[in-house]
Length: 102
Image: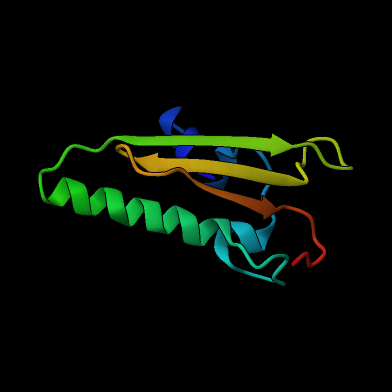
């Protein structure tokens, strides 16, 4: 995603930490999974915006781990665990390979 590169001052695609399948990144091209990282990313961003707009504190825990793939530098999948405040963690695994897995 772009959150980590943005933290380091990069803008857009040039500062990507890991290559993402285009479906996972922007919902472009051929779907490769039933889960989509972009959708989850937008859900979290919207919840943060909502809290900030209301003047509420934002307590977000976000852990992204990458599973190595057959090609060096391109993970096979990404496992994301996140939660707000003391909520139950949400865990999603996103395919990062070209073929449809579902």
